Length: 434
Ligand code: GUN
Ligand code: ZN
Image (cartoon, rainbow, N blue to C red; front, side, top):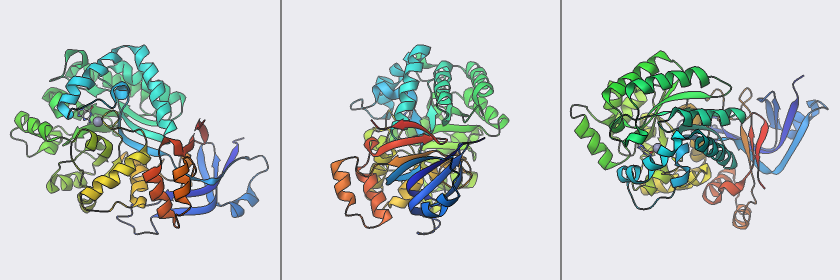
């Protein structure tokens, strides 16, 4: 018999994009709530006093009264091999890649190193309340093998892929169109759809992939109808100039990916800081998604993403930490910087939209909103527990918060990994603070 588990606390989740469905119809908040989970799936959610009457005596009850339960965070863009060079000083994208990133990624030819990093990395995601992520491996097949093995052991909903990079990069991190085709096929056959895992075809970015390799990537994507495509786009001005030199006849950077069949409703493009209106429109028409990575865009001096423009054209957007160019695993800290970037762009990013981007918006971007990103009945029970007293300042400030929106906003400004007291994956506690 499937055991019944019940979780108590205030419960909050987004039901829609506040840019499309106005407040209060875009969220649900239950002050004294109960979430009921059977076999890792949410079977009921509502007021404790209404649901507890019918709870079987055998149900296990987890009491988080005083804390807030929200969906697990979704990180739509992160690099697992960049743990040991996060916070590297002084360079913008292209020099940062050459000076710090590629030498670090070369170490992942060693499966023992990959395994140790994968363990730390996934535990760090969980410590920060992140239950789903779209993840870059290195060029080495064994880096992704190690990551999938560890994610499978934790039953996490993770999508990852081996980086494709066969030109303009050091030999130690270079593949070929032929070897990357073989490696991708083997990885898809072995891992895609195993447990809660999924595969993403992952060209590093256009300047690091030959035409032959991008052609192969497009073909592979066409052959595997539920595999994702994950890459970088229009992050940095020098990068964009380089792409113009490499593809003088392309309409723009997005057109380069489009030429190879990589602009689809399963495509996720990180950054998109310097997109033009027409590019947003083409992305919306094709159903492609953007990963907005504010801590990275500030750290590398890349620029200020235009969220309003993405909203105007109706492009799906999620939040990405982009560790190690991003400076925090915490989606709360990522919301904090997203707010400031929007402020500099002249608009106000409210807390409902921030939490939407970090949960349901991310799930939509990864084509998995029917599985995760909210706490609706039938969804997988990935959620976190927010400790409203995790620091003296947070505790003090929250006493003066009079609405859910204000509470969420304060959490997004003052909260970080310390605010995540528990992380549940398919109803099982995978992280408990302290
Ligand atoms: N563009 C190509 N590779 C990378 C990377 O590793 N990080 C970021 N931020 N941008 C990239
Ligand atoms: Zn990145």
